[in-house]
Length: 348
Image 1 (cartoon, one colour):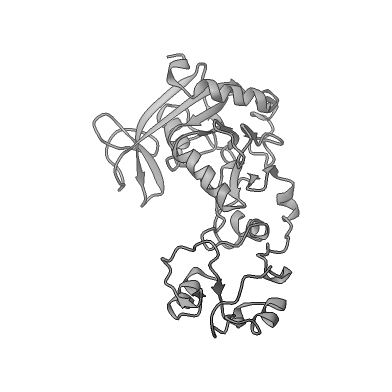
Image 2 (image 1 turned 90 degrees about the vertical axis):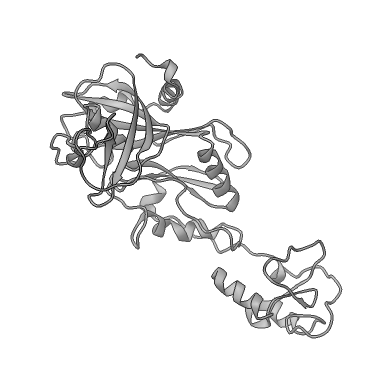
């Protein structure tokens, strides 16, 4: 039930502890007996509870502790299945987490978004908890494909959030950049989000902003400038382009797209940020994730979404598709990501 309904029941005294009204701040102690109204209980528990002293009708003192019946034990929700098209895109699953290779052009939120389609499955195995509501554990833009983590338990949600906050979970993206990028790059910029136009702008040394991803004269309205750090390693060189691994230390909106454009290598097909025309749109794929602190909740040191890197055909027939075989190895990508995460490892 909604959390607001739980609080309402507490305020009305409909839920009691040891026969007494308690507010929501009360911390349960060992051997406390919680009583709830009969109409909230189901099946055998409802049938038997009314006959017990101190049962859900709140009459008398709490009865002596007895072994709970099968119906009285906490239940897990009935099992649900993943939609067939998403089941094929599972790249990692455990008791606590689900990793999905998100298709390009698919929103995460909304009535028909990825989360809405996953919710029945994410909720089906989760222990009932008013503090756990499954949701995406990090962001991917609508047109960015690749690895997304969703929680199946409160422990999974808390663990991944903690790793991200402490930068112990690194994400590597594969991007099709315009032009020939020969050496590793380290980009440090300040970004301003122009919310009115829906673009991110790089701020130059003088504090001005220019075209999306560019520098120069002021343009558009935005908030404060925020630091953005990215490392880039070229992997392959299809005709007129560079297929590169990109690591972002900071997670700004449109960060890769804006920084790539500002440094002279906009994503091919990314018209918003000055990229060359491409009927299939730009190619940006979350390919690998490194976990530097594996534990019992999240034991995997790495996860990859490299099978069928270009399922939507965004690289086109003549540009980049033949180069994918050079970048699709999970072990090699993980090693490359670990190498470019630190500035002193890059060629300056």
